[in-house]
Image 1 (cartoon, protein in one colour):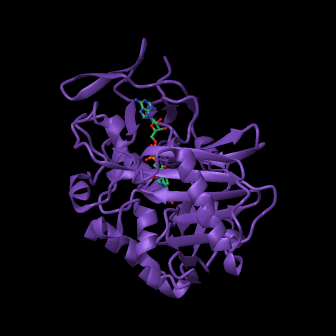
Image 2 (image 1 turned 135 degrees about the vertical axis):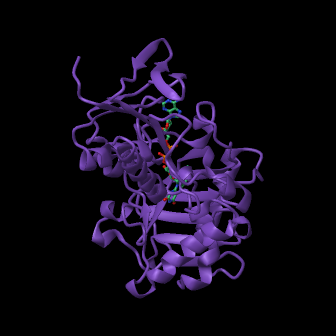
Length: 359
Ligand SMILES: Cc1cc2nc3c(=O)[nH]c(=O)nc-3n(C[C@H](O)[C@H](O)[C@H](O)COP(=O)(O)OP(=O)(O)OC[C@H]3O[C@@H](n4cnc5c(N)ncnc54)[C@H](O)[C@@H]3O)c2cc1C
């Protein structure tokens, strides 16, 4: 048997593929193998190909901030927008001042009602804006293909990827994992090997002695438009105040609408889609008679509720009850909003921690 050490990465979301990337960067001698429960990698930040529309659609429109140092690498200079329109449904007017609209920005980033967001998480988000103040904070709405643009780029650093491989059991002795079970298949963890759990909190709880966190949902609706539509002031990204929809982003042929922490006010999601389209039409100042075809993504576990209680329960390091298993995932970065940036940073921290304990 080869004596090349293997790092078994459980979970192929952003944090998992980031582990493969950082492992190659810091310790290329390790062989990395990703095991993903679903048929495809990407987790919550994946995109999929829609045959009827003949294009890729994101699971959810993602916002990246200019202060997200790692995620910035995936955005082209010309794609950043520094003018975000904030539209008020009551006054039917808009402004573009970031500082006056921190509540709606934080609600998007934290998927939690502004007043509920933990003080520490909120101050980290606001601090990012302040420290970037003189560098003009910018946003990018990831309306492009997240899987192609981000996930596959990082996943290309993995030596092996196994999809439809769900971890079902960890066999251990004296706090040392020796076998990983994926249904009927088992994988031996040799003394030189290491394991990183890159799971969401709900999936990690059965394996690790960690607190169970509360999640908020989110609904994303993509509308197919035969031609690119325009919003007031030529904005391509709009935060909405006082409406059902929270954020709208425009890309060629697709309008994406996101409802953060959706509170189930409509009897069906089709009725929700119809209502949100009427709001988009009001913002555009046009009649909503024509309803385009649409796709609805309901993410029941979109992100951890970022209130004080949940934040206090979140871990702040990559160590677990096993001496050879480390963990990452957006929820493991206490006091950080659970975002793409946190997921990637947690992957880097898990790799660094693992290497530290290797010596
Ligand atoms: C609707 C929505 C909107 C969002 N908006 C933003 C935004 O605007 N900006 C932003 O930065 N972030 C946003 N996020 C958050 C961002 O998507 C997440 O922070 C990030 O994708 C989390 O990555 P992760 O790797 O930590 O977790 P996940 O993506 O959840 O990855 C975990 C992976 O583990 C796999 N898995 C689970 N159990 C097992 C098992 N037993 N065996 C093997 N594999 C398993 C899962 O299938 C999954 O692929 C949003 C998320 C959603 C859902």
